[in-house]
Length: 90
Image 1: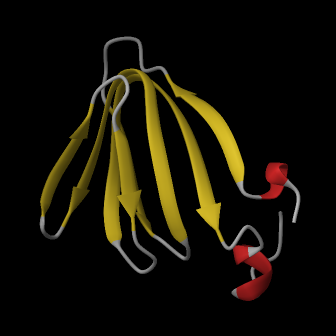
Image 2: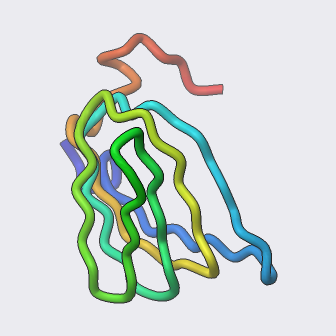
C-alpha cells in the first residue's frame, strides 16, 4: 500500500463559518490538527482538537466533522476501504 492511498492533508477554510460534514467511518482514522480548531461530534460527545492534538476515530463511528479554519493531516486504515466496501470512485 502506498502512503497516498491512506493519508492526506486537508484545509477546512470556511471564511468565518463553521463547516460540518456527517459521516459513518468505514475505517480507523487518525487526525492530527496542524492549525485552527477541528471538532468531531459523536454519540458520546464532542471531541475538540487544537494545534498539535491527535484524535483517533474507530471504524464504524457515526460522527460529524466540524472545522473552523482547520488544517489537518489524517490517515486511515485500511487504505483501500473503498475496495473493501465495494464503493466505486465517481
